[in-house]
Image (tube, rainbow, N blue to C red; front, side, top):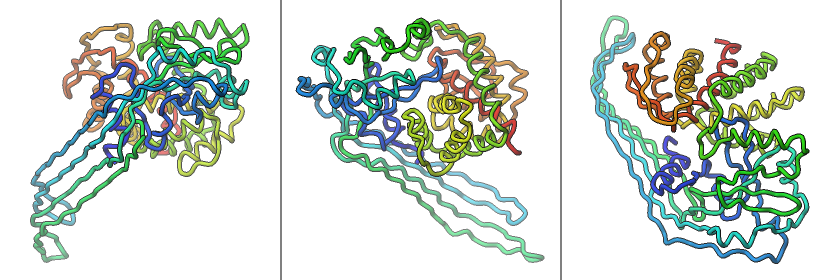
Length: 461
């Protein structure tokens, strides 16, 4: 459905305007982001965020019993509503081998939501009672997996929950009328197209208790105790105290060039380029038949963010079981190539794709089919390379020789891809404006285009 639960959550975050507030990405996981739920991330890049994956445990489940539980603060209900509807009328000429004439068409669409949410939060002063608490089990299974993979853990400290059942609705209609002449051998039959209508209605139930947005704080586990980092600036490796001493220097240096509030602090474009080039080379080492399978599997997945999300969850939680459809084909390739760390490579690409909007994923699928990726990759590189270091808005000009390689529909698709990253652009105008907020989605787009281009090179036309 065009306006999905993911769209609702993003719109809610915009309306609430809360600092560090994250939208929930998938309705099937909406109950797993409630108060005290533990999340993990498995970042594969320094240049874009990874998804928050619920591990299936609450913080209270892994702490010693009988410890005091802080009482949450609950806000008054907050009503939120968004309605969008439009109609488009057009007179269309028909001139084809089988028919000619004119048809009047009217297209309409309406969508929206009407929900009520309340905020359940634990203020920092109350979180103090959970600090340095002993773990119930010295190493729960998910903690062991996260430690071995050097993943990060977080705990939900604030959640916006739906207070009563609601329904997300999306409807569209098409009305046609006019006159069409249909040649049949010698005679021409004139037929009136009586007014015909078609309607489509989609609805998705959102149950009471579903979380639409949340805040999190990092969870550090060391010496059989857990600590919640109250300040986002106090970044620390979740398992720094448990990794070998030789790795601590690497962890600390990685932390210095990490992502702070979505902004890359010290890394430059050359580092991004080297990272993407290394991943592309690793992908090229995969047998050609397997690369073709990845290409043919990823293409339909771009139209369904939930499939991408489910596959990421399976990979991040190391649950490589059965999965239907194209996701299952990717898992088959993964299990047939144990000699290459293909799981991290696929996660790298999937995490980059998840940074992009639904519209961008659709445009990317069109670009794959039309073989536009190489030209788009060079264009994105030409934007990132000179502007990557600037933390302010500055004007720039797209290179004419790169635009010349994209004509007609290809140019429209490419402009829309770039605009959705946050760049201020106009079609047929090479002038644009760099925006710092565009750095992360543009970096993710550059990574996606580079790896997908490697797959396109080997795929059949």
